[in-house]
Image (cartoon, rainbow, N blue to C red; front, side, top):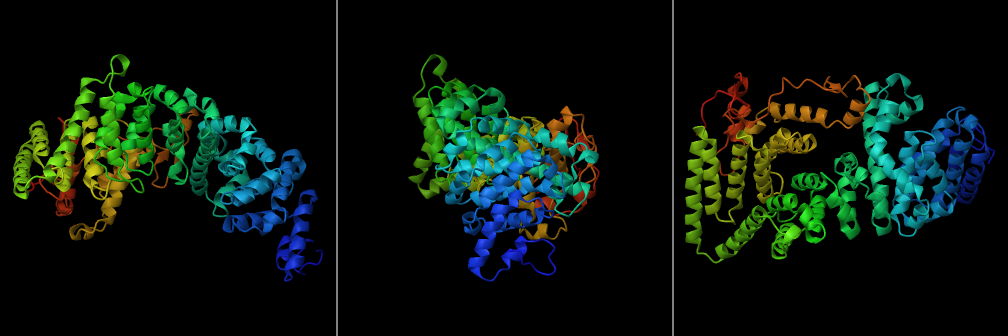
Length: 627
């Protein structure tokens, strides 16, 4: 063990041990290394720990180090850092508790057997001390990650849950994590702990890199806290602790999973809570949550189905249905045409069945359904009945109906072009009533065109409804570019920055992936107006915005040179509309397949100065009318 390479200054060097060719000697040396390391005070101890961290990240399912005592070693090192500040501040030992907790988390994230070994090795208590904030937020981040992995398994959850403060600490951390990172790292560049900067950049350096990484780590701190809380939420006995109004009301806004797509984020935790009867009551009673769930359910992100599940469970529960009906039913009606969403099949049928049961089970008093809600559901059920009838109709009759719908749609296009927006919207409604239910492509266009009318009439809620219906009908689901853009604008009118941002980004993705030959001739497929909206919403939805407002803001330039953390002047950004594409917002009206040709066929459209339509508040390009 003491025999080392002539070039190595450290006796018993871990890296020299790893080079041992004899497997038996190698294992014995590693075992001895893990046992002796916590009691040593030599310089250079962080080097083998960082090496072990790299190994744990790269090979988390390798049992060798687990069997040789790495968990016992890491737990002892964390305790040493907590109790011996002289040792912690010596050399580079300040990094060791962070790496040790990270190693525990990496080796327990996939293997229940490893998690059991970790619990038996006594890792929970030192991790709880880190979770309490005994060191800094950087160590809290990896401690909550490790505890979240340990809480995932049935065999190790009781050991985690036996420490009652873990849940309370995680809830507080989820609510305050962004402010903690902002106030302890982001806000004061000159006061940053150097080892935090080193950990965040890993040698890449630069204030901008540190700031961006801090935003990512703050997001992870929040979403890993949510993941740990989510493990508790599966157990009804913990719901009273979780379902407190001050926490529930913030959950829909916790979007940490945008960086960590495997995290449940706030909506995933809400779904777990709503799965239990004892959780649905507090959720339904919390102001703003149902409305937020409706917005997420209409969105096009990975959590859409989670919000739909929440709304369905709340609506189907007799004790909560009357509280959520007015907001949940219209949202679910908009989503009823969706066939499947990823792995979630026949989602639309589930929605229709739930709404039908809701109408049939209506009572009197507080459980009665308003006439407006009843009409919306009955209209949906009638459309489903239409679909059944159409299956038995002769093809000639269907063609006649489709032709009649086309004629009415063209009348609507003509009214739209002449400036009669209300008249055009009525014609599109009439065309929808005529258009066969199976003619999904045509119905997508009609809904999307009517959504544009609602935008120009300053009716964002109606625009969101129609754009959502078009997106649900489209194949593939949620990929109709025009509807994404129109809904992004409608959300912007309502001040819903995150929802608008998601739709605008998806719209840009559709632009960049388009195979249209005319569009491919453009050097930049992404429209300028979409870039401006994304920049605006990124400022409005900035991760640290609330914390910055509370702490007085921070002057920090982003990648595009704009100021972050303070109110930016958006006066140059006018309400984005498709009118910037050249036709008073009337692009592609009448195009059955909504191809991109008319958007980009004339370069001069982009070179003409915009004027302001004072009636609608939209930029209007003075260009020739479309055919």
